[in-house]
Image (tube, rainbow, N blue to C red; front, top):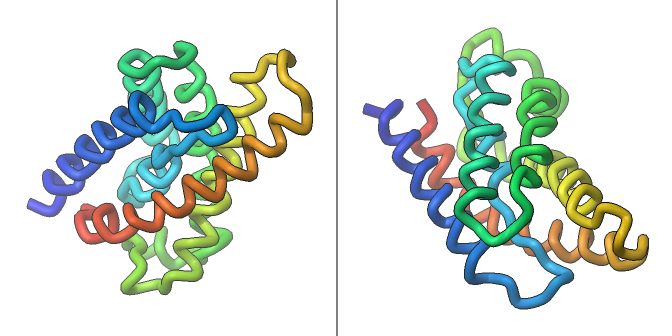
Length: 169
């Protein structure tokens, strides 16, 4: 039951990301995303290759159904999925993999989950802003977009912690 409820929440958050992409474009300086958090909270038993395939499918789905460049979310999300296990091990320790235990705010504390989310979101946005700009925008614009997008995405990601962690398989 918990396994299917995680994937249901995952799909609902994917729909929420599509709504954010299509209707929350208030300024060119901010790109709000919850995709890195969705990939980070995949169950521990999902291997890196599986996580990268899920990330690619998720990113391509968002790219195809939103009004952006096709492939940008997929390109930025694959490295997040590749580095996911290393980031989890760095922040939470090796014990999660040994016990095959998923992490949550309740078990491991807000600060560890926040730091891991900050890392994956920063990786995602650095790649996303760089690829989307394609050398056509100034460094200052891209830097401001990265900073503002990181701040906005972290606020939205904090709201997603509980729903993903509560339904982890």
